[in-house]
Image (cartoon, rainbow over all chains, first blue to last red):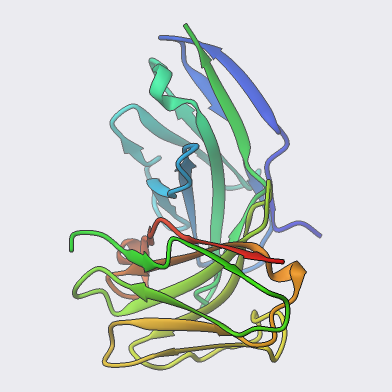
Length: 114
Length: 116
């Protein structure tokens, strides 16, 4: 079974609009961390946002926010006011339990349209 | 330097040869990680180090793969007798330490390996 599922292989959004990238996860461990990374065409992985399983508040970092719904096991990334530079591949990842392995989803390719 | 650096940035080798990939983590980061990303795919976790110790090597694809870290800093990933299926981008990341928000991983630019 997939531990991290990103169901949107590709997304388009108009510049200045908000967009939500979906991520669902599967774990039975109460302690886990959820991460979103951006990978532009240059290839480097850029950390965007982190949510711990015990965090009470949804994480926010500038234009990025994480819609964390623990009961539904979803951790969707919301990008507000999209910019052309946001066009990239976006990966959701989970660190599960006491191990320190990151499990990555297959990614969502976002294209921002002018 | 300010970020994670990796060398070489590109490596072309012939099937059967050994290759060594190097990672320089962010100064002060105690944890280091190696991943593999095949074309158009997500990241495949290979191994992590806490200090110089690698507690779990089960993510390494085969016994042709090995990794070491010395002095709590530089790490090398060695692939012996390379095969064409080893062709991928190998990414290294480091984090301040393991646990909670300090585990956030910062990635290097990767080494693109092509096995002919």
